[in-house]
Length: 306
Image (cartoon, rainbow, N blue to C red):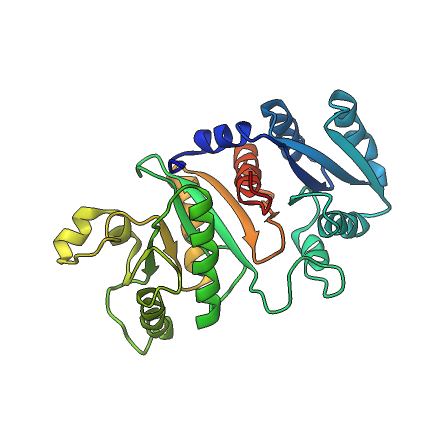
């Protein structure tokens, strides 16, 4: 499969699937979520199970009336009940992807992480994967973690790499190039994550992550700009060609996310990984396009392969 280089190609890939993906949307009663649902229906790659709380049931019914063959509506007495119902629909195999509507993220995650009926298997790490289409970069850029893990431990770093590598491969990138991000290229015990980076590189060299390239510490510019690497005298398959950036903490990852979207005019997509199905939890401030591309990404990466 040819690598997916931009979000238009991502949507094109979905349109080419033989079977529509099944998406549960919890509380789909805001303008951006309705836009995502209707655009996805028009693109023809998804069927929807809309779980609406009672006061907003008519919004969901209006969408169902327009696309009766591809939309089902479920009523819940409250947003929390809607979250529980949405999670159960995924858990019971009725859907491939879970998406957040206007419900508060904490309320949805309470259901996703519920030990009795949730979607995170015991022992799994929950992490957020972001994909950015940056006008000045020649391919999609993957990175973690901008939303979930405050200070990754070694095993959380390991999970972040595994998840991102898996997503890259679902997007047609057979040998992802992974940069471990820091403010300099030096390992220093004052920054414990750089010591973890040494261990992660040893694991990569041992083949634990499969066919891929992993290097660092390095800064984001060196990872994505060949000239920067040349000036610094750094030679690596990753330098200037990174597919993926692994950030040392949530502050740096989140700042990178917001900076790319605001000042870099980047289109963004993101989803949670570690769960039994992709979970799309867009921010209230995300654009309709960002939410749409997030759903498209989750559909491509959902477990049922086409």
